[in-house]
Length: 304
Image (tube, rainbow, N blue to C red):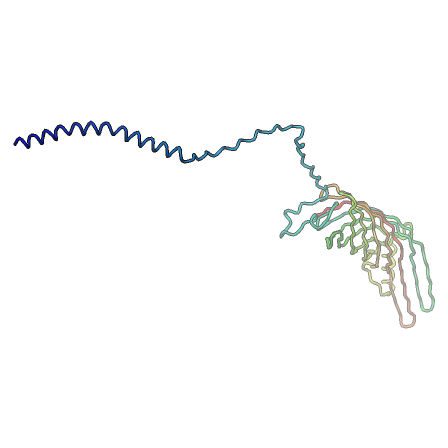
């Protein structure tokens, strides 16, 4: 029993000693561990932090060195005679796309002219009775008014094709020697040469028919021949004409223009060709009018 008690006392006496020894050793071991870590950190090389590149200082800009601001180039003004291509039927190119300028650029054209005519030529009369032949020739010098109305259709860039009807009033071959009412009907080709937005030169060759509705001396002779048994027709007398007009047009609006022309034409007309026979004697009468016509006209035209 005493041995057990002595052993317990020994153990109880040893415990405080061990506790004190642990308390004394613990700080020393902690210091040793910290010193080891410090020495390890010191022995390893420190990684340098990346340096940030310095920002360049803003340069001073001299306003005088800046380029001057360019102004937009002025757009050329549209030509007065130009016609808008929008709205053309079926997407077809309009006159501007076709290169057309100047007045009367529409596809169709209607014109009206008023002016004068002066005919210079001969009026020939021949009468045959059996073997007897009588010929008479008078000079033609007649002056009068002339009115034209016509229609032209564009067939090429500056070319139109169409026709015109004209009325020349009373036609007298010399003085008051009335032959009747003068009418003409012709086919013509118009060639236009634009020279400015509102101006164009025009040339018009024409070919057609001249007609006189009998009156005065001609009507009297027709009636007389019919009474005397001559084979004579009482209707209009026809002839052939060919000529050319030249002039200019000026555009008043995009669709309305004024025009002025002078012209020359040659024509011939068979006014009388009557015959009669009684079985033994034959007779015939012929009247022919041939002359050159000088003319001048002014007028208006509408294109569309």
